[in-house]
Length: 137
Image (cartoon, rainbow, N blue to C red; front, side):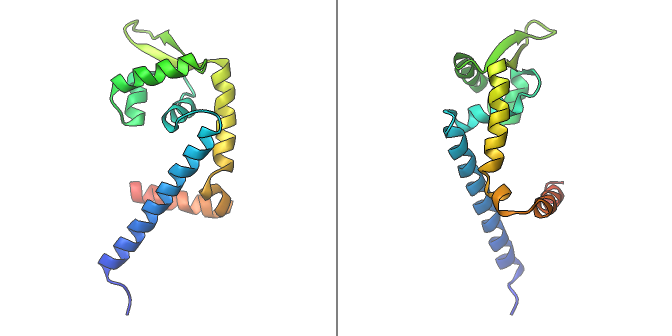
């Protein structure tokens, strides 16, 4: 007898949560190798272009006041610097040359240390991305 819709939904949801938790753990392990917390690493990876601290807070789904401490720590590490925006009341975060180098290194390390990258072929990753996009639409 095939599983009920409820059983199927529970089983799929449980698998999705397991994959998400494994991906988070993989990420945490990789970024710890370079001495960063996951939140610090997400910030470095996201800062491709200078960004307002409020935009970063939205991206990280945290309060803007939390970004101040995060920016302070990354600034102490020499990874980011604060610069004035067009509106001088707005501070932008931008990667320093050291931060740019770390961002490239992190991108490589995260890709290499990812369960998804390690266990799926390129075609399977593309298929997964399509399915995830469909679920998130």
